[in-house]
Image (cartoon, rainbow, N blue to C red; front, side, top):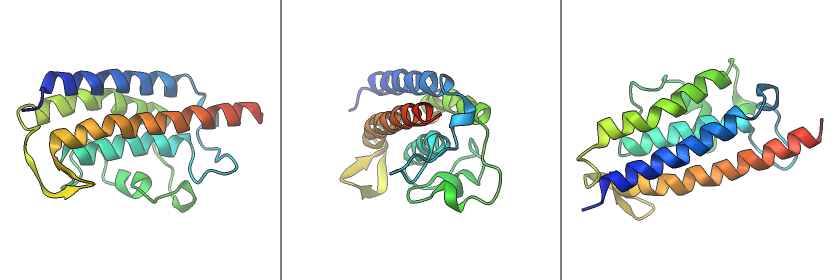
Amino acid sequence: MMNEESVFKQLDIVRAATAGLLESIPESDWDVIPKGFRNNIRWNAGHILTIQDLFANGLRSMTQNLPGNYLAYFAKDTSPADWNEQPPSKEELIKFLKDQPGWIREVCKGKLDQKLDKPFKGFETIGELLTFSVYHEGLHDGVINTQSKIVSADK
């Protein structure tokens, strides 16, 4: 059986780093798509949030914890170029990002060994998806950090 407390602690630590990074970047930089990139900082922040939500749900569907339009904005293979409405604000995204680990702990406690309806990239349980999400989030944190440096250097 997977050590739940260890998984939840990793989610908390990585998310605190993500929130701190995002808080340090002025919102005026969030919508610039640097040369060579398909997305921007706002998209990466929302993508981390949306994918984590899907993982915590065993890839079944979105929860009541995020607005329904988040999937259309931030799912894999989406892009700000396709947005035709005002995307969520920095403030809203950071609030959801900070609140999400507590929600995941509440909803997933005792369920990390629950089997997925079908395996995803070789992962078979919710706990395995949540563990993978730490890597996924770190990957996007690196992209956010890089984009922030490019955008601020281009000012």
